[in-house]
Length: 268
View 1 (cartoon, rainbow, N blue to C red):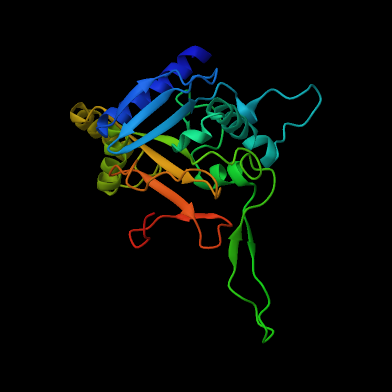
View 2: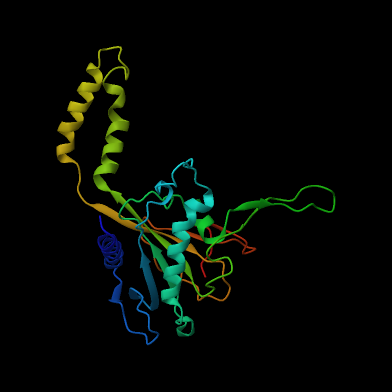
């Protein structure tokens, strides 16, 4: 899959998501900044600018120098994510005075080997390795541990105008159906090993092949949104990107790290 195709797929998936949410959008609008971010989005009363970035790299699977052992540090693993955040932020630079939320959107339609599936890896790419800190209390006891952003994150000191980083998540209906089917039927075909000569496994495969003729088609696109810790960025409203599958991470009370938004958390 070539680089152009990967970028087009990422933008198409974001466009699909926006249409499904009922948002309208303009593609690569002219702002007079010399840059053309991918989407100017109208979501109810809100206007949002988004730049989409996909991944061409093979990340941790890049071929090492001859004679080297193939090892990858966490910094190496997160480098592609940090680079794309930086590139996207560059496209959004110059729009700070418009008072619109500016959002970096990351997608991996090529399935490249980067740790984008883990929210904690995304958090680390944004703000560095998360650490736990606790202070000593006056009575000599240890206070409650709190997460604190670590080192080497793309947004720790740079790009204070970025409101959020959003990661596109995709789930195939057929894959979800298959997982549920196996969970429901795996105990109905005898032992899983070779005790029965493999007859149970063969029967299960045959049953699955027959049942899969009615497997659902299509897929769901949703976003996992990571608000930034920046106090100067225009906040991304919490009534935007709130589809039934969407997830959001928000600053904790001390603005030292991001934590999952729960139903009991008040919005902005």
